[in-house]
Length: 394
Image (tube, rainbow, N blue to C red):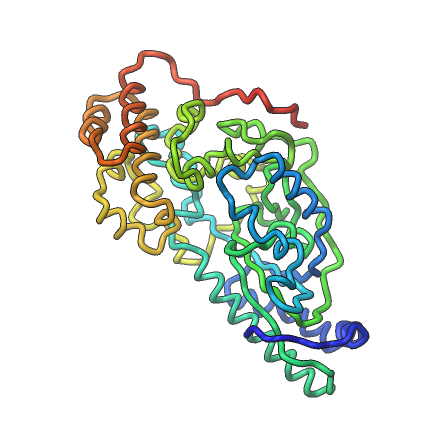
C-alpha cells in the first residue's frame, strides 16, 4: 500500500472538486459504518496551533517518562515524513463502552479492582487497524477507477492506517475532521456520543474533499472533570500534567509510584475513568456493539486479592490479547499492592500482602510494605490530594 502519488497542485485542485470525488468522500462514512465505525471525517494535515501547544506541553515536562512523545517530532508536525505525499487524514471513531456501564460503581467497592473501561476486553489496536486497512483499500480501489475513467494524471497511492501507534496528533485531527471537540479533560467529546470511543486514522495521498465544519466547544462553564480528578492532574482547563494522572502512574510509569498519589489512587489498578464518567455529555454515550470489547475473565468485577494472587503464568494467560499485558507482571503486582493498601482493613488482606512480601522484585516489595503499613494504620484515609500547582478552573 505504500508507494508514491505524483499529482501537480493544479491537478489536485481539479480532482478534489470533481463531483465524483465529492461522491467518493460521501461514501467513506457509509463504508466505515459497515466496518463498525460510528463516525468518519476527512481533513487536511495542517495543525500549526496544536503543534505549538504540544511543544509547550513537552517543554513543561508534563509527558513524564513518555519519551516517545519527544521522538519523531518532524513526523508528528509534518505527516508526509510519516507517509510520503500524505495530504489528507481520514479520522474514525469506534465506541467501546461495555455492555454494563455500571462498572464505574466498582470504585466504591474497596475490595474490588477497578480497571479502565477500554482495557476490559481485547486490545483495540489490531482490531481497528485491520478495519482501517480494509477501508483504505476500498478507497484506493474506487479512486483508481475514477482516475482511469477521467484520465487523471496520478502515480501510485500512498496510504497507511494508524491506531495510537505512531507520532500522529489523533485528537487534533479528529477535532478538525468534525468528530467532536477537545474537552477540558483533553479528550475528544461528541455531543451525540460523549467520549467513550477509540480513534484511528488513515493518512493518504488521495486528494479527497475535506470537512469544513468544526464542532463548537460545548464544555461551557462546566468544570466537573477537573474537580473530580483524584490526583488533581489538571493544571488548568485543557492542560493535563500526565505525571499526576492515574492512567500514567499505573500504565506508563515504570518505577516507583510516588507516595503522595497512592492513597488517592484508591482501587484503580489500571487506568482511570473519573473525568469521563462524570462528564455530562457521556449520558449520550452508546454501548459498544463490538463483542471483542466486552469484559474478559470478569475483570469488571474481580477482587483485588484474586488478581494479586495470580501467578505470572496466570497473568500472561488471562491478559493475552489485552492492553493490560503491556505493563508486565511486576507493575501489575505493584498497582494491585497499592489497591490492597487502600482496601478496607481486614486480616485476609493483611495476610495476603504478607504472603508476597518476599516477591523477588524490589519494586513490588516496596509497594507491598507500604500497603501493609496502610492496613495497620489507624489514620483516616484521604481519597483526594491537593495539588499546590493547580490553577483555578472555570
